[in-house]
Every structure is written in C-alpha cells, then in structure tokens.
Length: 108
Length: 210
Image 1 (cartoon, rainbow over the protein chains, first blue to last red):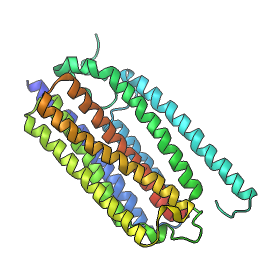
Image 2 (image 1 turned 120 degrees about the vertical axis):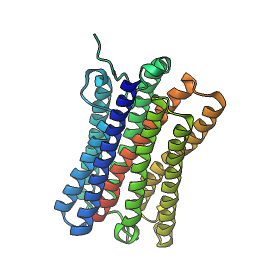
Image 3 (image 1 turned 60 degrees about the horizontal axis):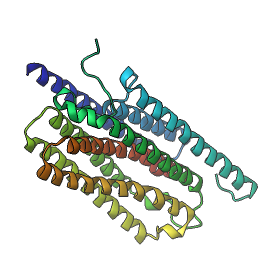
Image 4 (image 1 turned 45 degrees about the vertical axis):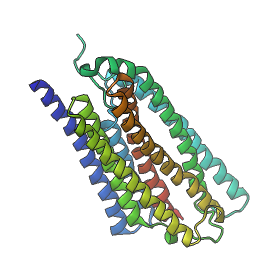
C-alpha cells in the first residue's frame, strides 16, 4: 500500500514537472514576443525553438514517449509520421513558393 | 526478469491494478495512436497551406489587424491546464482513488475545454466584425481551415468527455470504459500538442511574416 502511494506521488510529480516546464516555456514565448516585438527573424526563431522545446517536454512528461525499450514501437510510428509530415510540408512550401516566384505573384 | 512498471502503449499505463483493462487497452490504444498520427498528417497539410498563404491577403485584413494575442495567451494557459487535469484524472483512475476525485478532475477538464471554445468563438466573431471572414482572402481561408479544425477537435473531445461521464455512471468501471478513458486522455494531450504548433506557426508566424 505504501509502495502504491509512493508510486502515485512519483507519477503525479512527473505531470506537475511537465506542466511547470510547459508553463515556463509558454511564458517565455509570449514574454519574448511582448518584449522584443514580433518583427525580426531572430525573434521568430527563438519563439519557434521554444515551441519545439515545449512539444518535446509534453511528449516526454504527458505522453510518456521516450527511448525505453517498451515504447520503441510508438517512437518508430512517431518518427515515421514526422518524416511523412516533413516531406509534405517542406515539399508544399518548396513547390508553391517556386510557383509563385515564376508566376511573379510577389509572395513568399 | 522484466522491470516492474512497464509501458506497453503510449500515454499513461494502467498497471497491474487494472491488469485486464490494461491488456484490453494495449492493442486498441496502439490503433488509436495510428489514428492520431494520420490526424497529425492532416493538420500538417493545413499548416503547409497556411504557410504558403500567409502573404495572400488580397488587400484584406491581415494578422496584425485580426490577431488578439492576449486571448491566444489565455487560451494557451487554459488548454495547457486542462492537459494537466486530464493527467490527474487518469492517475486518480489508475490508483483507485474515490470516484468523486476522478469525476472532479474530468469535470474541471470539461469546464476548461468549454471555456477554451468560448474564447476561441469570441475571437472568430471579433475577426468577422473586422472583415476577417474565410472567403475574403487565401490567407483567411487557410486560417479558418486550420484553427477551427482544432477547435472542432476540442469540441469533439468535450462531447466525448460527457459521453464517458455518462458511461462511467451507467456501466461503472468496466474494462471497456476504462480503455476508452485511456484513449480520451491521449486525444486530449494530442490536442495540446497541435495547439503549440498553432500558436507558433499561425499566430507568431503570421505576425512575423504576414
């Protein structure tokens, strides 16, 4: 019984750490935007990296995806989906960007 | 010897206390995870369209006139907190805490989900008042194809929460109901992940490049 409450506490702490980390990254993200204005590429890169960090924090602490052996299959699935996603997104941006340059539709 | 706390599927695992539900949940949860990933690909396409449409404003209102970052900030905090409460509800279920505790955390999650939706709908109406309607420009079409799609997912999650609440009451803690709760928690965490993409790409990206 004692062992169980100990386990419960440990798992709850995981969620609270994930929440605290995500909260901190969110505050940083909006703080950077508020402080420096959202105009330059440098600011946007910082925001993008903070967003990526928060994705990883939530994947690890909320969804329990890590490199442990037992969750390897799920990790494979996520990595494969990410590959498909990157091909779709980068391909779309590349092709449509190229199209708009050739059509002189001054966008992108 | 296998290590004691094993993880056989994504998200929180129910453990030995709910051994039979755990076993039942393993396959369906992996299947649900496959669904989530294909949903992710769909969202990814909408993101790609949005990125290519950022400049296609056709003289209509752009991100600077339309986006309300304070409201977006509030929505982010609400959704993040609901991701925590859904986790706490799962822990209450896993460790057999009193039923009232489980209902409490799911209730809080539902309330947070509904307030997120209320804020989002208010934002859309404010945008429409400034002329930001989907048919105005390619940029707005892409925006309204993506962000309300996420809102629709949240609304489906809220409906699912209500249905599961009724099932918990009527059917009790059967293996079937428990494994559905596991999938709902996964779905809810996934929606928060998508939202991070939306604030980073749609809102901040729109304000930077729009």
